[in-house]
Length: 100
Image (tube, rainbow, N blue to C red):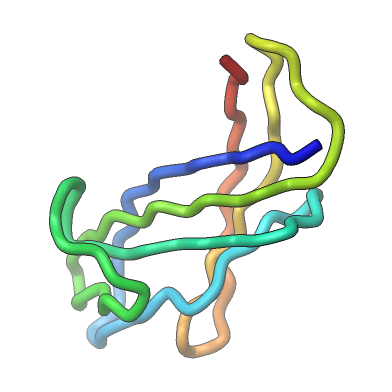
């Protein structure tokens, strides 16, 4: 059984240089496939290579396909999303997603 998790995030670059998100993964769940895009704002142009400008925000949409047990409607799926940047840094965020 394949579970699809879609997460939308707003990220902030607090440095003085462009940063690119180059990878994303879940900490506790193995994924069959992971897809992500980065854009200047929700509903705007998205690409995998969009730079997050210094002291600016960007919108990240990540989609994870997880093999595993099905979560019942209303049951929470929780994990830690790890975003990796082009300098080798990892940025972590704990998430909880309710099934529908």
